[in-house]
Image (cartoon, rainbow, N blue to C red; front, side):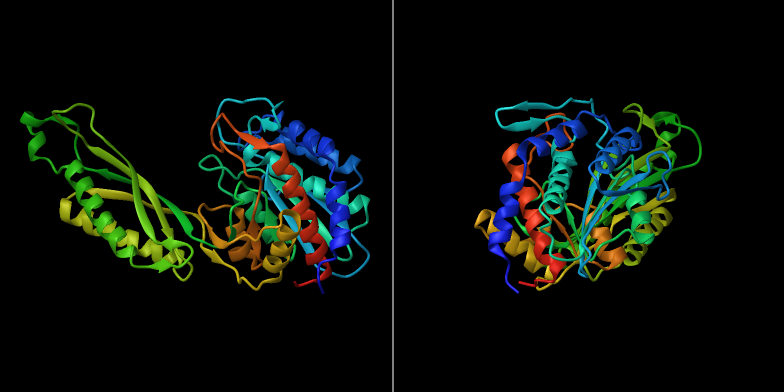
Length: 395
């Protein structure tokens, strides 16, 4: 079935800018650094409950800030489209909401309270106009997203406990492509140590096993590994990689230190397993420690796995049709440059997930800004996608 363009146009016209902006401002004005999102979750839950939605609060392994679950269902069988967003922000100085020259500023405006407000407005309009032909919409909002303070475990638990739809939209700040593939990400931290105490170089330091030399050898081997990984490529997602971002050792120029730390990232493509990543990294640590006479501890910590969804998946085709209806533009298929909760929905739950949000700036800074026009666009695209996807209109 083709998209009902008249019904979609009516839904787009009904998006209420004042109501949407009021929701976004209210969310931005509540400080919610990761692991401290209780107040905003309480506010959102109460707002949705008062708005007539079916609301539940679910601990999902994090009783300090139970997740918000809201539903809007029709009485006709169909798919459920899920809108998923995180309520927490990175640990930077709080900036209250400010509306100026057609933009919304403030902590979380870009990442991702503005996008979440747009998803909520889409739900409201679908409900108010009774525009959803079948199925229903599920909204999930949670804490523990932003690393390194959060570990993603709350959304993982929501998935494991069955709070999932048949497809997911995530209003993160990616809007220039339709991401159908994304690399996995692991963070690595290693600690190189030797026996003994720090000592002056001329008082025996030069005779000690050198943690700095061992670190240099470790970096050499990791660089060789990255060069080998460069041969593993995907036409959209690029190549696999290993990146060293930090190294620290020593207190003064002529003292032999006892410890060196090294950290960075490992990114991989669909087809590589996290077990493969762990094994490769352990082998390098073992070889370096054995050859340099030092101890090396540490490893890789999974952030999110790689994913890929079919360009012919119903969520992809209906989303593309909705985007074309709202904007008169077709999004190119592409790769997601970062990892987010969408990776987890695909790999952990086996359901398609599309990251698409406002064209916003300043994520992970104190200068977050999102154009109000972009919030309206996202709300319209989400609402029209739901109309087609939930009804099974695979265009």
